[in-house]
Length: 210
Image (cartoon, rainbow, N blue to C red; front, side, top):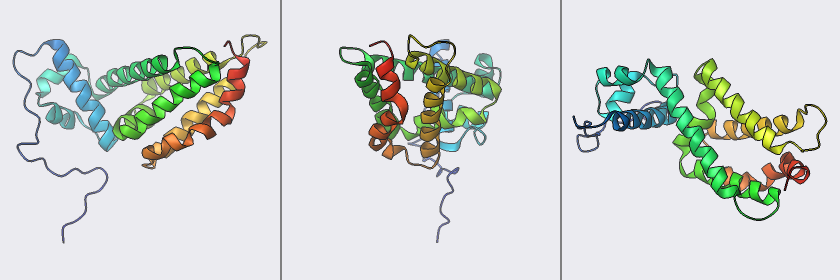
């Protein structure tokens, strides 16, 4: 009987499933985008620690030389892929939170859209939410900055001095999502929307600028 694949293993691709090599005419931007997409996909499947440059270039159909013409090392490539992921998440929240209605309702739309995205793309969710903690201090700094930005948005305008409550709420929700995604439960995240909103978001939004 065949040995089942471990979570970090993938079956060998048949020739028809392997990515075609990048064409020689590909621009620098196209080659960079291809490698960043490959990095994001590999980290989403394997985790940061188990992903190597070899995995990334194989998935992208590009050479090691091309990789090092664009990135200093694996961490540099991951950080740029993570920056793209954060930009995507900010845009998703921005589109969903735009429009009329109380701030709490707009936050709920944004969070709901993000949870749906994680459920539909568990690899992206793992890469963007879970793996930055394993990718070194620069990635953790970016993650912490994103949490602080969310906390500032939730901070009541009349708050006196610095308050840890918004950061505690934002960080706590991040931790809940990270643990669920790490356990392979990304598909269940949309069902948590109401509980997450009740974990301090509605209360903070009610005190913030409408």
